Amino acid sequence: MDNKPTTETTRFQISDFTAKPTIWETMQRDLDSQTVTKHLALFLITVLTVSLAGAGFVGFEPSLFPLALPTLPDFYRGLLFAGLLLGFLGVHEFGHYFAALYHHIKVTLPYFIPIPLGIGTVGAVIRIKQKINDTYKMFDVGAAGPLAGFIVSLGVLLYGFSTLPDPSFIQNFAGHEAVKEYVAQYGVFPDNPPQETNGNVLIVGDTLLYSFLASLFENVPPMWEMYHYPFLFAGWLGLFFTALNLTPIGQLDGGHILYSLIGFEKHKTVARIFFAVLVTLGGIEAIPFIHLSLGEFDSSYGLLSWAIWGGVLMMLLRKAFRDDINWTLPVWMTSLAATALYLFLVVGNITTSGSLIWVVWSFFIAYFVGIEHPPALRERELDPTRKFLGWLSMAIFVLCISPNPLYLI
Image (cartoon, rainbow, N blue to C red; front, side, top):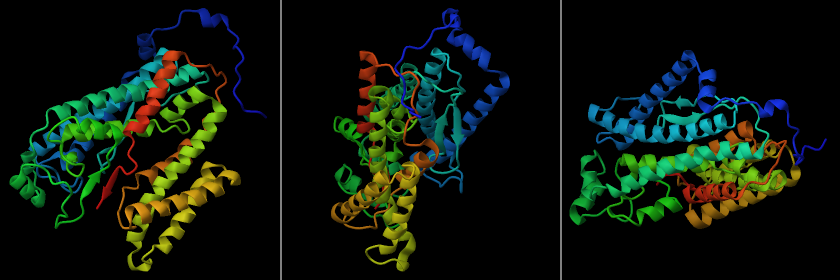
């Protein structure tokens, strides 16, 4: 049976012309005190976990949450970070929420998801309770969140850049002795991260937009110190999370948007190509991680690491492409070759450890999201305003994505 969407005009019913409830009336109908309490409780727990985790990044005497609690001044700095990051997440999800209500689509309030690791949260989600079968509605709901969140994150980042203290501010933080000594002597940050005696240096991956904005301001900390600055780090995370959601695959926000722009068949091909790029980025992270984990059990060239990742990659591709050999085998070979070229010719080694973000994201998409967008029953060509906002969203994806978001050297 052909599953292509139809472009036939839908049949109108008498109920289509009856008065529809306003957004406020829809909210009152769908919400009750128990529902609001549940969502509010999750939000408050997330505020706590992000504040505690954030204190470890932006605090003057950082502690590793949840193993130790931060000092009160550091907790307040973490609370500022939490307010900025969760403000972005809230605006993003409520952008989806109000767009859904505008189109009379049943939807839940945002669920904030706390976790006592990393930055204290894995984000927030809303649950749409019915299938959206019209590309206009699909586009509006998909684009409202990332566009609203992008504006907030951009504002946070610009404020952070415009209010930066001079480099001597780094003297307030515990550790970083080599950096402090350099700043005290020269008044600027060093060009390259010094290897501290207490371990590896965490580097936040640069993006096209962040790099451009940073070039317009003075006293911008390097990417291996920027996570101490709450406005910079929260702004960067907001833009990066926006880009993740704009990945033009499956039923992610970017998948909804690109499907509405180019239709079912073209999106199916583009989504598969993007997934091939994604698993290649995952391989660039995974090979060094596996190699370092195996230690002396692996050869200097990581032959065992390559074998393990090759098997994992084949499993991922078979799931994502539904055992379509015409896509699985070529992408498998091309991805492994591209990963090898990058690690051995560009990086020069397989010992630079990444964050495994793309590995996790690849599994999430392959097993929970799917790379192909289900066909809409009614495809309509978008009007000029929506087309402009759609391609703007795709440009934001390119400007805000980082091929290597977090890594150690």
